[in-house]
Image (tube, rainbow, N blue to C red):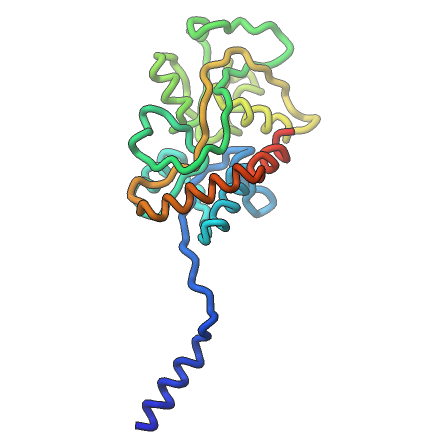
Length: 242
């Protein structure tokens, strides 16, 4: 009897009563999409990552970033319970597929061309016979396809900018902040580009799996609201874009 008493006491003492419970882990699926998600000096940063870190901290959770090609990332997130995508453009095609937790950014999707010469692109009709590039699996690709614009899909935004800067592509369809940030990061070696045609206004979200339990999604939504109302999201955005 004494033996079992001392064993039970040892078990109680080995697990402190004040030990914090393990925080819930949310898989964050993303791709290299500056300035929202990017790899820098062996780590990850960006507007979306920093904002979502704040959201998860307020919700008592932690995130685990998984970088995948964008199409695969979307399929992976849809199949899991505790998974989100960042950032994801909200669109009618995607509306029923996700829980839309919080708005990260409003921005235009725009056609960019090389700067320094007059643009001859004033409408979609002017794109006939031209090489237009966009990110593989993106809402921009969906939009171009819907409007019957011929284009090529590339794995990364860096690939698209490179094609445009080398004159391989005639136009690059992309979120305006992404294009401007990539050029800014090139510094003095940047090949200047300019907007030629605004295509549509978009809304970039933290979007989570439809399989996510309602209570978890609600905690995330409330935490996101607090981050936005506190001004934290605005300050994070300003550090990257101003």
